[in-house]
Length: 530
Image (tube, rainbow, N blue to C red; front, side, top):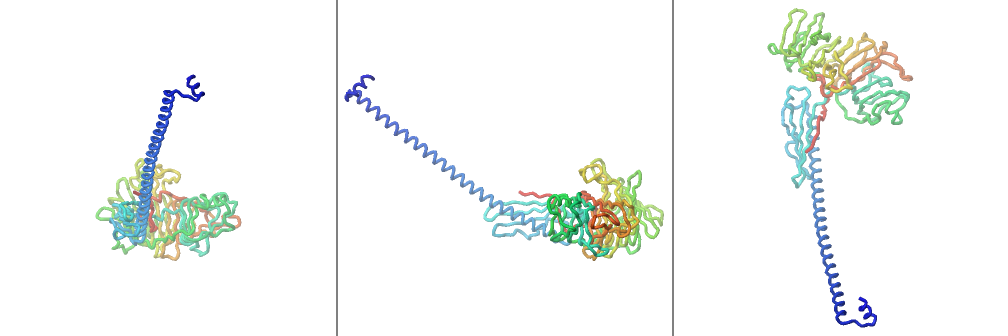
């Protein structure tokens, strides 16, 4: 290496070494050019692969977006078909019993695609008071095979779901405005087709309403003022201002009690023309409820130790005793005028219909017939009069359940399994002036109808007798508001009548009294899509 350096300095290169050096430089340049070519080709290949993948991803994304768009269109079409089918059900004067039913008249075509729906009636509908339906609605996007289905499970909605309902927020006694005030306590859903009037002061600590409140009116009348912040709203409604819905749908009251009449008699013709108490039968089997012609008095009691329900019905001094033995599936009828008991197979369907006034109603309803965690038979009753003929029910003493349900416990709690159910339907349901200071009414009450000018639940001594508390477990539905007392609007202190303690019975949503009137609406029990 030292020689080569020396030759370089002298400017002379031996020929052999010079050739070797030149060849080495050429080889190096060729190698470099080859490496660059290979690297360039590899990079181009990688870019080509990445470009191809990008194009594929983009095309797949476009395809997915198109499918999702078509799926959304199909879903919207299916949902629209389900809404139309539900509206068709609501529009029927008499709920259908048998199906399937095509409410649209076949598949319908729009620019966006096609839609169709079928309504399936539950097998139990022929004998059920609350009819149930399944709507299967299908939508298909245009120019594709993308389809979606919406499946709704519906049940007729009962008025029993309300803890408080009014058609008009006016007194059926004076026609004056009736106010809620700070000492009122209402638990459960509340609705009015009219404007609410609420007398409330900001110092009131406990809410008046403990569940949702809705009104078909656009506003609320307040005295002395409305709540101004979230804290004050929670002193009126436990759920705050969001629990109040204004401009809600108008809900008509039932147009008559004809269906309860038919259910009690077990037929729509051949009704009795002579005063008396009738338990319709076919041969020796009960085939209806209890039908009463003329005015009467009714008292419920429990036979101990059997636990059987006893119903005493009195007309002009004569008492007919009906004993309902659910474990034995037997009904015993004893007419006081004859003294001979009659034994029938089966038990009444739970409807007691009276063509006249029920001038006295009181007593205790027996427990359900249950075994462990299973209700074998409900002891459930609906007592109805001829609303359009102006017939009333007067409650003369406590009307209560043998076992009180517990709204803070699950449905499987022993108290909720045992507790019976009661519904009252009349033009007016009146609490007699002679009722106890602490008064208990267990049951849901409906007073008045769509075709009556009045109808309410009220205390007969509301103006002049001061009582303690009126405890209602269930609900109150009425044409106009009936007064149960008065109060001083300046200090919200009770003056006469009862303080209201209205509690909700959540069992009424899924298990209302038999043949209790329905709202014409439907509850959605389940909703799913495919």
